[in-house]
Length: 282
Length: 294
Image (cartoon, rainbow over all chains, first blue to last red; front, side):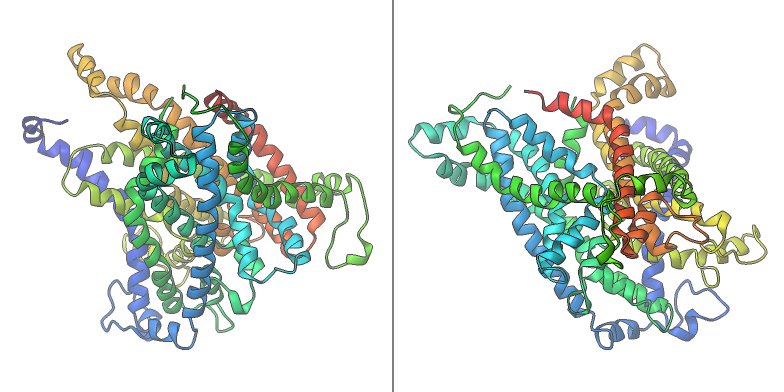
């Protein structure tokens, strides 16, 4: 804690060592979003004139109108929503069960299973992508949302198991034990005691899975076709035969990032706590 | 150590089963599949000729100039990418650890790049660095640092630094987030005691802050190295590995090969990348085994 006396004594020091560098880093981190927004609101003729536009003289929402009209951007948004939601529900369900097992039982093979899940995120996307492509083709689910849902579980399940295991370990066992002593079975004890306190953690983990699935591009571009393109692929496809239309791309970008930002602001506190606790301990 | 609730029975295994089945099906079976494909001339453009060819693909790799070049660029991409993420992320964490107004808001805002889709990141920076209408060119000309526009992503010398700049931008928040949590875990008493002993701030940083963050730095750096080495979408959507392979890392090369449907060769490359990452992660895996040890 810095005392107020020290702060008053060194207003210049504080400015040069805190305020100025903070403004510099924040400008670097946030300027691209400002630039994307400005571009999306700039009419074509202003955008491709000799002068760079820092704020349009005549801001317009034309690009957004075209995005949802001519380019039917609602379709990829719906596709992404279906994929992300299904991935989230599936991953959360199986991961909660596995995490509960790791957190509450001690048994032979537990350590082996845990390491099996943990090492998963080390495998490159490109390693899994190639065989998954041929497997999905053989299973006849290539170009369906299910192929993406299954592919996304390759990174969502290991991550959620790890995160939820951390959250569960923070809850004391005494409450559950009391319920068990009172004659409840384990499933009842879980539903009555653990589940209610776990809800915020499930929401945070779910939000993260949803964001990851919403954002994913590498699998999506190979495993979808025109009918079930997801948002990142549709965004890239806006670079069409007409060449790059930056006002269209940036308006698509703003629309893509808004749902993610909203979710993130609600989930961030719990999510950050869960993410950092593992690395900081020890 | 956690006390066991009841004698272990079949339940813990049943609870792990669903997740295990899925992970087996989508991770471990595909890996075996990839290994087998890498030993065949598995080219989907010529499906009738697919046959076992042994280590042919691997042998071909080491005489492939594009492969060795990609390997070298992967090292540059990871070292500079993660290195600068660490430096700026650490700086941001130190700043966010101080007291000031709107700190919560500033902290959330600075994390947004972390949750932004890779495609969007690539497109935003492509536009910012654009050779004709890019804002960076405009600013540099106004400052008088350059005379005429630079096509950052189309120029062989500037392309790799440009994509590295983009991945640095993307990765600063994650480092800041982890290191900030680490900083907040350091007991203030340590600093007070050092202050009484007459230590000044650089000494406090050197002898308290850095040693306390050692584990956080190690884990975060490992995670980032793996992630950055594997990342495809940023480079692919900015330059597709060009111009003249100047930004083609191993992951991007593998991805491009898979797109040409030469799955056998692409698999061999993916396996080499995986083995390199596994070797690199031995210390991390070692610490993970230790931490999970019960």
